[in-house]
Image (tube, rainbow over all chains, first blue to last red; front, side, top):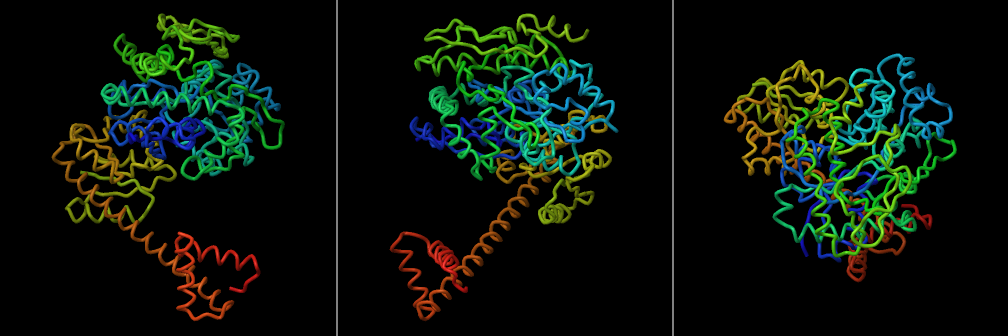
Length: 401
Length: 193
């Protein structure tokens, strides 16, 4: 057995790791998998960066940020596999939500209108709303900034965004320390369940196929252990297929609910897997069919264009200066080459390219793949913009107007 | 050198503070991570911030380090990134340190060494305390189970205990598990104890 330690944060999207351990995918592949539960993203990052875990369940923008040297100690990270697509939920306290469309399902259906309602609601509020973020370098922060900015809100000026671990958000809301928060499932739903907050937006309605959590390694370790890395990716890919199976959702929710993982009632976890969840206590459920994707559409494939989208947003918000060097470093964090090497013989449909236009598909599209048929799901941004990784400067200039 | 300890477990902060004072550091402040603690920290302008590696407040602090104007000088987690032994020891012990960039390594190293030792000492104290608590709770449970057997089966205390022990051995379970099962069963059947 090969011992391997993976650090994770308690979230629905650590599902693939939990299934790999609990359903035997890791053991079958010869791994003695140890999952290290951490409390904050800073801790997950440090355990990976300083070698206390071989791999980590990590926010995609944090992996890019650590590699670029904008989150404490600079360390080259590499992500050959994505653990999921989508999954974040933005909730605001019931008082603030009163200023938005009274029909909470309509809010989700029209992100553009809701962004403008949100801008007006800020004006009506007695002070700057305080929105809890799970990390400055998170997909949550980047998609929320993107969405708010579409209605003329300057996220650095018009709202304040303190950082808290996802599992602490609902308590902070109850204590009045924040007015709302965006967090990965199931933590957004905890406050809704308690009647403290209402869902305002879900990340899948801002970007239909948003990049979320990665399996990240230190690049140096990954390069030195190709056999272990490939074998692990194969095992995790099988676990991801199991997680995506609708018939396994109830069991998966139960596995995740254990104290050593999320430590929450499976009743709260299940909706984030099924995509049918409450937006307001007692109101009809919303349907978000692609709320979280683990395996289908080659969800695990790390498109380099997605790493570059993250880089483009870092530049947009002034986290880093635009340069050819930074662009290259960021793009290299996503290792589609290693994914191909590991899963090439598996018979899974393999994308023919490593980059694509992000946000160009409004309907599912069969694409070139080396084996079988690969259909990519709709991946539009709600405002219809398309990210061309070859024309980042032009893309960014488009936001200035 | 001004050292701030961010901690809301009073005991650990005291253990660490005492150690630092004994070693001759006298500009030490303990800040619990509640309310406007980051603003307080900014006003204090510390040279070194020590906190629990697993503390949820680290994310809050790092966010402030990224955007704060008052703490404009960059802060690094460890002074000397090449000292892998020390970094490993710090993480094992659960110490995270934020140090003002430019502070000399020789000045910070003894502080970190001490913090690592004290965090370790605190962790083993906690472990001992938990063990003692568990042992006490287990003894109480076993005593209750013995009392049930003594009353319902009219056994002596020694016989009650040996019955528990032989049952546990026959079922390959721990005595405490058998005792708990017995108490549950007795409660269900409306037993007095």
